[in-house]
Image 1 (cartoon, rainbow, N blue to C red):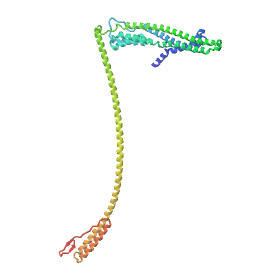
Image 2 (tube, one colour; image 1 turned 180 degrees about the horizontal axis):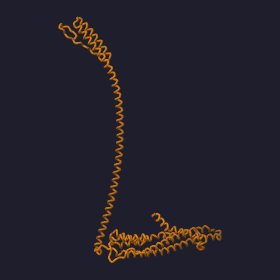
Image 3 (cartoon, one colour; image 1 turned 90 degrees about the horizontal axis):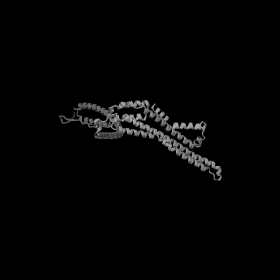
Image 4 (cartoon, rainbow, N blue to C red; image 1 turned 30 degrees about the vertical axis):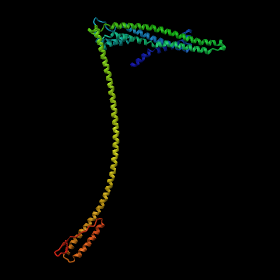
Length: 423
């Protein structure tokens, strides 16, 4: 809502809007016969340059008219004062500026901004911030100069138009002379003379109109600017009457210029130290922020590099271990199969050995029985030879089942007669 109101105010106060509107209305009345003046039609509507000059003139006059309405408002605001209560016999403390500021703000809210309340508000704010009225006179001079500069800048657009209108007129002069020179016919001067005069008429008319418009704008601007200077002088006087002698100074030190000078020097030193501290703090803050950012960047880069390195190393190790485990598993399977086959063969061998061992055990029993029976026989040597043949036969059978032959020797005992017998 605030921006809408500001935009509306800017449009309403635009000299382009009002000047263009007046130009359209003027030429409408001139062409439809409402304004019947051959002089105006000749000097203002015979060439496009004249339309441009007239439009610029009305825009400049609109700017001056808006300024005149503003000065009327400024004068009414000045006549509505004084805003602050009358100055008493005793000076008041600078802390009362807060109450004075509220009074000025109520005035601004009721009557709107103007030179007088705006400058009074700035001066009171300065006293409140400094908590002293020692430099109030200097501040008032500064505020007066600021308002004068701002007032002068308000006429910059009018100055531009006053400067531009003669330039446009000279352009019309150049165009008119060019038309006149183009219409000269040396072979028929009498017939081309009216065309040449028409071009020269345009050339001189545009220049004359431009000069007249510039003169009118210049003197109108001078009159309005003089009125504004008078209003600014009245504002200066009203502000001085409102503030000078109202606030107390430094008490006992008010008349002591040396103490005041020392105090000002100390204040300037304090201000300088505070500004240096603030600047140094800002520098330290920037350095710390930059260091933190650099450290965070380094940590992030280190973490990323470490992560990538660990991932690569772990990946390589896992692949290596996986390959080694696969190879080991394959070798283990091969060895297991070989061991299983060897165990099967060994089991078969053991089974054959056990079978042969059982047969040997039976033969030994029979041999023992036979030996026992033959122990007293005379044919012992023949029996021993038969046993040797049997043993040899058993050894040959054991060799066929994959075991090394074992020689079985029978122990010999010596009888009382000196002959060997089987035990």
